[in-house]
Image 1 (cartoon, one colour):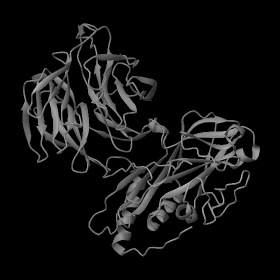
Image 2 (cartoon, helix red, strand yellow; image 1 turned 45 degrees about the vertical axis):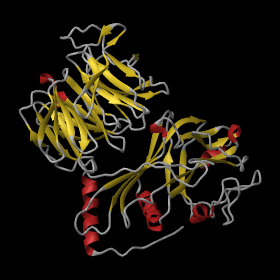
Image 3 (cartoon, helix red, strand yellow; image 1 turned 45 degrees about the horizontal axis):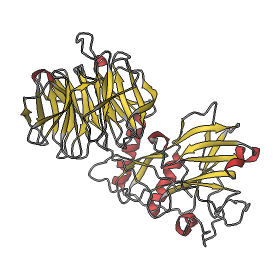
Image 4 (tube, one colour; image 1 turned 90 degrees about the vertical axis):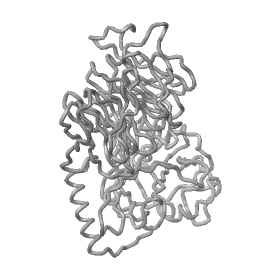
Length: 515
C-alpha cells in the first residue's frame, strides 16, 4: 500500500479545520443559515425556469402568456409575450425551448428568435387539459404532465403524464398512477423519471424503459410537490408550495436539506457559472438561493476491457464483462467463491486536493442464504500497476488473478487482508443501499489522490464464503441501466492551497472494473 505524508501550511490547516467543523455541523446542499435573495418582484405568475447554455434563465409568466429572462448579467427582460399560457419550460440540447402551454392546451417549441411551432395538441382526438410541466430526455423524447384541475373540467378524463418519442408528434399516455401529476423531471442519463403527485401529496419515481414508457413506480417521499430540479449527485430539489420551502432528498428518498422561501414556491433550476445557485419562482417574485459549491464527476475508467469486475474461484480465467450484477459470497452456479472488484477514477480532482469526507454507496439488489456482512478490502498498487490484461495473470505477483482453476486467493499481493470497513447485512435485501462513511474511507481515498491512482477495492463476504452453498449478495455494477444500482463514491474535498477561500467540492464517481 502506498503511504504518503503531506506538510500543510498554517493557512491550509486553519481552512481545513474550519471546513471540517462546518461540515460536521451542517452537511446539506445549502450553506448553513442561507437566506434566499429576491431578484425581482411584481411578476404576475412566475413559473417553469430553464437555464440556457449562456447561463440566462428563461421563465414563464403564465397568466400573461409571457416568457421572461433573468440574464446572466443580472437584468430582467421580456423575451416574448405571445405564448399560449406557457408554464413549464425546458431547453433541448439543440437550443430549442420546449413549453407546456396551459391556455391553448398544447406543447410547443420556441426557436431562439421566438418563432413558435406547435408540437402536439391532442390525444385520441381530444385536446389536452392544462399541460403543466415538461422534461426533454437526452434522446429527444418529451415527457409532460396534463392535470385536470377540479376548477378546469378539461376534455381529457382524469390527469395524466404523456410521452412523445423523438421526432414524433403522437402522444403516448403513460401509466403513472399519479392522481394529479404536476412537476416532471428526469435524470441526465435518461433512466429515471420523477413525477410530483399534487393530489396524492407525494413525489414518485419510475424506471424509463428503452421504448420511453415507464415502469417500477416507487415513492420517493410523502411530500406535496410542484416543480423540481436535480443536481449531479442525484439530489432532488422539491418545491413544496404549501410549506413555502424547498426540500432536498437523495435518490433513495433520504432528506438532505431544506430551505424556507418567503412566498409559495412553484419551480426551480440551478444556475450560475458553476451551477452554484438555485433559481426559484415563487409567489410573484423570483429568488436566488446559494448552494454549497460542489462539482460532481461521473466517468468510467479508461484503458480496461470492461468496467466492473467479478472474480470466481472455480472460473479464474472467465470474463464476466457482460454481467450487470456481481455476486459476492458463495454460489456454485456462479463459480464458487465470488468477489467483486471496484475502482473509481479520481485523477481529475484538483491537484493537492484534501479529502474531508467520503461516502461509499453500494446497492444490494438481492440476497440468497444468510449473509450477515460484506467487507471492503483495499487493492494494493501491484493490482493497479501490474494488471496488464484481464485474461493473463499479472507479472507483479497479484495472487487473486490466476490462470489455474481452484487456485486459492491469499491476502497480500492483490488486496489488504485487513478490511477497511465492514458493512452489515440485516433483514431482507431488496434494492437496499449500503453506505460506508467511516473516516477510513476518506483516508484511503486521500492516499489514492496523493498517489495519482484510482481508489480500488475488492468486496467479499467471509461468512458467506465459510458457509458455502448458495450464500451471496447481488451488487449492481457500474454498467447498470438502472442508475441507482451503480456504485457511487461521494467526496467532499478542499483544493490546496486554501489561502484565499475554501471551496467545497463533492465528487461522485462510479466506475467498476469487470473481468
